[in-house]
Amino acid sequence: MIKVSELHKSFGKIKAVNGVSFEARDGRITGLLGPNGAGKSTTLRTLYTVLKPDSGSASIDGVDVVADSLKARARLGTLPHGSGLYPHLTARENIRYYARLYKMPEADIEPRIETLIDELDIREFADRRTQGFSQGQRTKVALARALVHNPQNVVLDEPSNGLDVMATRSLRELIRKLKAQGRCVLFSSHVMQEVAALCDEIVIIAHGRVALQDTPDGIRKRMKIDDLEEAFVKAITQTEMF
Image (cartoon, rainbow, N blue to C red; front, side, top):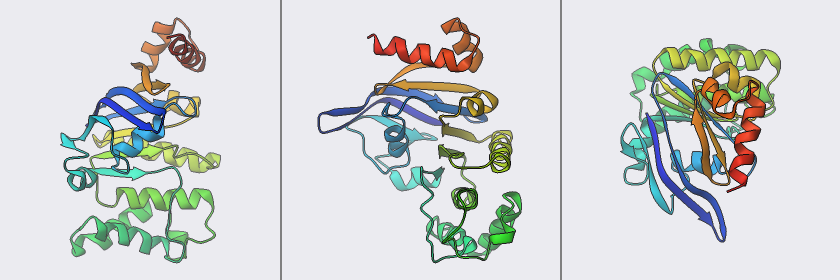
């Protein structure tokens, strides 16, 4: 489970995150939504220990991301915005490198890589250098890298950005599979169709704070609007008034 409590983070005079609190539970898909500049990426970067909050806390399965960042990372698989693959390594070598960073037993690494290559359908380019890969290929390799150590919690920052229709469908199937395995999945997206199709719960962030957290149906009912996108816009607009 991922838990965020009263998180604050400023950059100079800009308050990027201003008291964000929410929970993302195991066996559920939680969507993190909000307009550009709302504080989503800052919140996610705090969760995967790239940033330290000014105040408040965040934990992965009860492990504080600041007090014990290495232990928290071990419970987390992350796909940040921009895959960050090493271009002169093959896809397989990129995945293997991360497995070793996570200190996986050597005997477990190659079988796990083979499993991910099949699950993510990357065998065709597994032994090619990643320089020149398409966006879909890069995303698949980055996902394999994030999942290589079998993390209980998975954080995906706009994972479908730049993907074609078939790659997007494949990604959705993978996210549903992670949920079925009882994992906690937290992802950020601007694609409302994707959110509606996948999410059990949605956290809407605006102006650095949580505007609304509920199920998709709960958000529609509370905003008294049937269309999820319109309900999202209304929640953001109401936050702007305060």
